[in-house]
Amino acid sequence: LDAVSPHGRTESFPLPSADGRVVAEPVDAPAPVPSYERAAMDGYAVRAEDTFGASSRSPAVLRTAGDGTAEPGDVAAIGPGEAARVHTGSAVPEGADAVLMVEQAETVGDEIEAFDAVAVGEDVGEVGEDVAAGQRLFDAGHTLRPSDLGLLKSVGIDSVSVYERPTVAVIPTGEELVQSDPGPGEVIETNGLTVSRLVERWGGEARYREIVTDDEDALAAAVERDLDADVVVTTGGSSVGERDLLPEVVAGIGEVLV
Image (tube, rainbow, N blue to C red; front, side, top):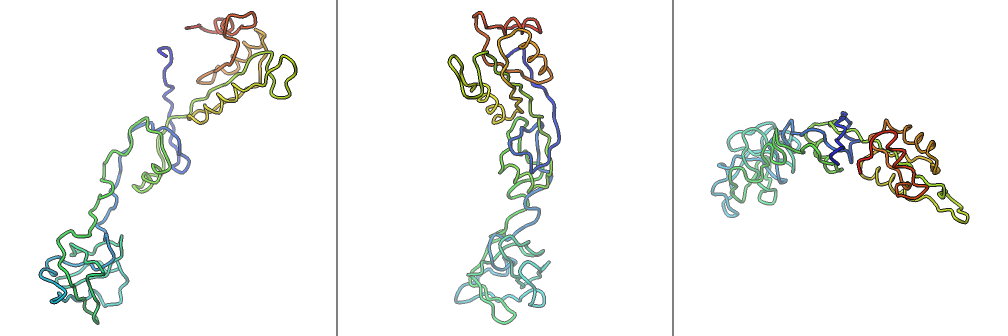
């Protein structure tokens, strides 16, 4: 392995197609999630101090913010003594610092009766509660999963720098090998198929070549044809038998290390 080094080639890849790819450089969140204070419950956005002392026997009475016809989450701001209806995930209006759950309130005309006090920040999700701006999401070398792609999209990333998939040529060798219908003395080729599928599963691009017979010139031509690949894998022909010609072929092209 000391004689082998990573190819280092990278490419920018669109997010929907990056499943299974390997991150080439650290990825940090460019924006927080959420980017606004959000309601964690259905209910009413209020100022916590306006509910202090509220109980079922002595509810705090708050005015409905706006003209009373606004949809939940549509009110931009509330003032003292006001409440605005919100859904889970709605932006909390400016001026509000808590959410009163809908079960703790009742609408009476254009007023809201609050039957419980809430604390500052209660049922309010802060900016960056899920992901903080600048937070490290992935280090180089991480293999992306579908859930990772969802996370990247949530922070506004639509492409990612990944390593190019290495090209691996797989050359099955042996005069006894056939692809199907073996006769006496013949064997169906399986090792090359197996290796090529493992290459694809582990993130490479496989070139699954045709069987090459035990002939020195044919073997040399087959190997030289794929010298542009990152890795050339041969199956068979590497022992010390009369037909095991690959060590000699490799020595004629480069260097036999083992």
